[in-house]
Image 1 (cartoon, rainbow, N blue to C red):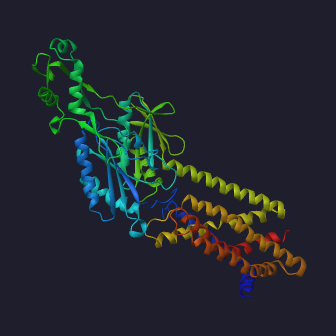
Image 2 (tube, rainbow, N blue to C red):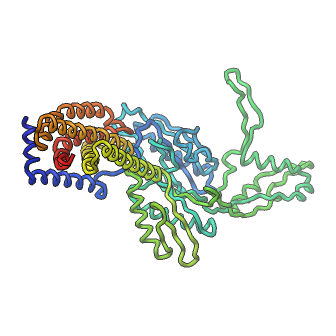
Image 3 (cartoon, rainbow, N blue to C red):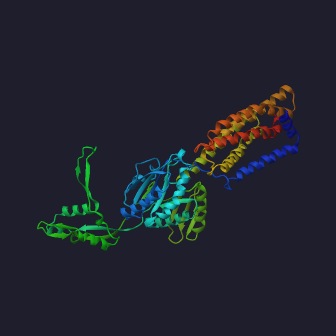
Length: 550
């Protein structure tokens, strides 16, 4: 009875009705303002708490396996200091057995002495008080600072919480007249990305030029010296590469044990200079058919050549990827800052133009070379998902509007119902704000949050329909005035509406703490709670003038 009188007083007073509109508008404006002010941040899915992660190690092309071992040994020692780390496996010159993350991160393509992958297992979630992604964030800075010998690029790879992608942010660089110019432009993009505090593990997926030595055998000298050509090749291969020469059978072994033959550490060069290689080759000798020892260097000509870079392409277009990961942040925000820097810093040498979405095009003012910058990775998946869900939300509103028009034969009343449903976004956003305040990590507005918001439209529209139909029934059967009928209908329907709301809140609370579906649960809780307030106060005010026309 008190609620009925309270609502009736609001309907009878134009000033109080205006006050309801004003409060609703202020709350709606405040909720929308949380996005540009970044009080609430949007992200595809939050980080995934996992019991394992990987570390990719990439040294400069041409680096030796010994150098790679030094870097991985340093990383392993630092990891062992952390009590949460249980197991460490190091794979040098290859990637670990393929897992979900490595399917698209090109782990299987690792085959160089300058590459390695470290698989790290940590304690289970219930045995630690920190999430895996926060642990990785804590480990990253120290390891990259202490173990980046020989300019090694050390990247921490987490199991993806959503669709597997090459990286959180992938900048695809197309164009340029040559690979060198494209790589030079990629370096400029990478430098800008490195200036963003929340972007880490930045890497340019393009080989740097380096000198390598080719050994060319003089067949005439070999034949004249009485040495077999095959003998020279085998000696060189055994000395530096090594090979299996036999096997050993053991009773307790399931398979034959291979015998691998290679020179010891004396085969290693002192440095990368040509003279060091010459000195090593002079120490290798072979016996000819006359029993005379001849050094192998006398049969070899050493040539310096530039190692050709590996070319990458997509859709038959040559390109270079610049990748970056985010550290406790969504992809879109550091990307927007980096994009603004690109527009401001590169306009001196390039004519910069915006293409579709966030992509950019650069034309060199001197050489007229054109470069296209297209963003991909989890960033693109996030943008595409939010666009699709936003489109689905708009379509749902339009369909409900026309359904209400067919039912009530009134555009204005149908618009009021749709507007009341849309106002529930206030509850969704403020619920995310509250969760962000009480949780340790950032609580993002995710794709599952939007799914929950779309589902709220039907619930809110049903609440409005119940009040409208009951109000019309009271006017026709009881002869009440419009305001009396609306007040009585709203008060009468308040109990079943609040019971529905509480049922939804209790059911959704089970999802609120879930890593992936937490956004869905929080959206349903906040949206249904605000929908009750909207149904009790905003809907009666917005429909009172329209019911008189029915």
